[in-house]
Image 1: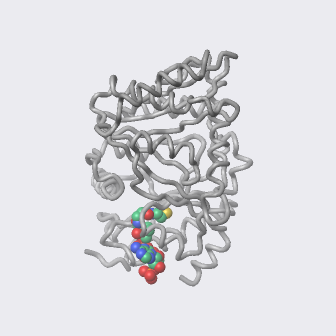
Image 2: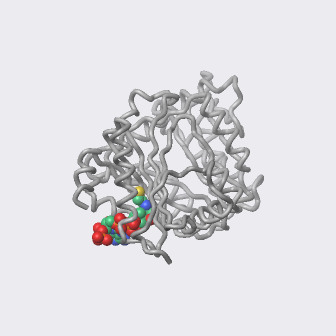
Image 3: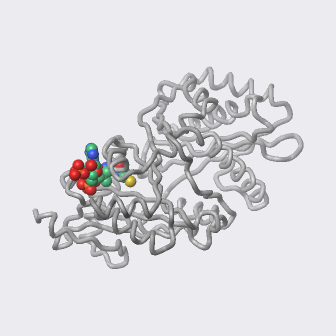
Length: 360
Ligand SMILES: CC(C)(COP(=O)(O)OP(=O)(O)OC[C@H]1O[C@@H](n2cnc3c(N)ncnc32)[C@H](O)[C@@H]1OP(=O)(O)O)[C@@H](O)C(=O)NCCC(=O)NCCS
């Protein structure tokens, strides 16, 4: 093995990768996946290519990779994600950068992450970014963030539910109760939102995102997470097309009030080929004015019943919730979700970080 002293830190230029480098990136990715989700099967080189060449029009990405001297062995990588000019909230988001760094186990504690972070922080400064944020679920990541002075801005529980533990009698009871209590409300189900409903869907997700932020505001040590990453129709359809290419399936269930508007929603996605059995729970929420009528429970119960019938291979569902989101946590615990990890979002000013890294 080459010494880490000859580590090369380079931009992640996917267009220039050789097949051997793609295979190495695939091994790295599968290693990272094994720490976080050991139950998932390894991904193929093709699936990895799709993931790394996916472009979210709302975000720009600057990646740095650490290779050995001969560029055969990858030590680790990091990314800086910023708001692009296509982001509908660009004015509010342009000062924020999100950082992700992952180093392979044998190469840790040799300052590889520190060197990657320094490059990404310098890039952020050059781009006019003033605040950096990043998530850490593993103890190593939390220790690394603390070491460089970042503060916890939000905490979330990652929870998992095994389908074999679900009490479907209770689920069916929730469906019945929801229908009765929320009189006149009807549920709609889509894999992709039809164009005639897209504007009201965007307005609903925007309001629910804001609600989630409000709920998460007090979950950290002091400051709250910055940034408003809201959907617009163009990026929604772009994302839907790209996910379909990767073999992902999405189910969205919405509640429509007798006055005609949407009051709530729940969304899941899954990929039968690359993540067999696993379902990822996305945004669930009910507009403030319509809460307290059993709609949240009804939506979640309806989704479970639908999945049971249409995805019989499903074995577990993963979800993430702010530690301060009492109503959602209560629904999830009653369904059988159990916390498997604590995710923390860290935050620090770019100048402060550069100063600390200067002496690292
Ligand atoms: C977090 C991670 C990127 C650190 O990579 P690394 O190359 O080992 O980090 P460095 O060698 O640059 O560490 C710098 C300092 O951070 C702190 N640190 C890093 N890992 C630590 C650990 N496991 N426990 C305690 N402190 C740690 C130490 O103070 C270290 O300096 P020291 O070794 O002189 O004591 C790596 O452990 C990893 O990939 N973890 C999983 C992914 C993750 O959680 N990433 C989130 C970060 S955005």
